[in-house]
Amino acid sequence: MKKNDVRQSKFLSKVLRHTPEKIGIRLDKNGWVGVEELLDACRKHGVLLDRETLVRIVETNDKQRFAFSEDGQKIRANQGHSVPIDLNLEPIEPPERLYHGTADRFFPSIRKKGLIKGNRHHVHLSKNPITARQVGKRHGNPVILQVLAREMYQDGYTFFKSANGIWLTEFVPVCYLREY
Ligand code: HQG
Image 1 (cartoon, rainbow, N blue to C red):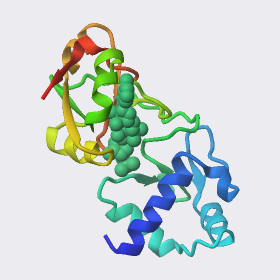
Image 2 (cartoon, helix red, strand yellow; image 1 turned 120 degrees about the vertical axis):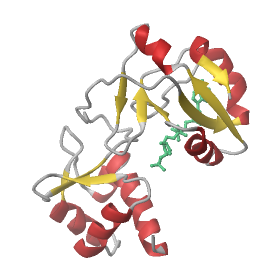
Image 3 (cartoon, rainbow, N blue to C red; image 1 turned 120 degrees about the horizontal axis):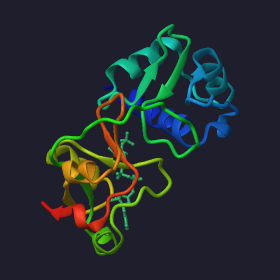
Image 4 (cartoon, protein in one colour; image 1 turned 90 degrees about the vertical axis):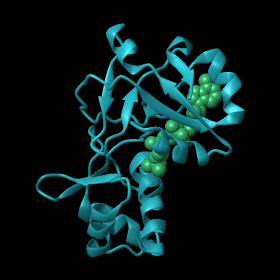
């Protein structure tokens, strides 16, 4: 991805997940905003983003963070929101094990309280430890936790998978966590 695209992708993550009001847009109840409305708002706020660049960012984004609606008129983030929107995800059976990457400084608290979602809608889990390590590195010295996802599921916990393949659940109690 081009350097400038990465910068704009980060900006889009911010406004489509957390602070749409900063550029004066409103997400609908499912997190969508009109593409024209978004481009206009960006322009007014000094972010020069044209449709062609937006399409390229959506298509080439390393984690497929964004999606267009079927008619191509709207855009939303695929996951990671802190604003109250509903992605209409269907519950789905998880694999045997999932992974969570975090920083070592969070570990004592996680060991006491389990994995909590904080500002986001869900705890984010990865399907492999390599991805989890990348996620953990964003916060500091990475630690990888294994989540006994199948056991959780059998015990009645609900899992979802975002359009870009990230596993989501409300909370992971300590008893389902193992150091990896
Ligand atoms: C930690 C990125 C203390 C948790 C990634 C994490 C992901 C606790 C941090 C997505 C805790 C929250 C989300 C507890 C959890 N005590 N700390 N009890 N429970 N934590 O950024 O999972 O690039 O909100 O371990 O790839 O790191 O933005 O969540 O370290 O998919 O698309 O609290 O963001 O995607 O941090 O990352 P975050 P995350 P994007």
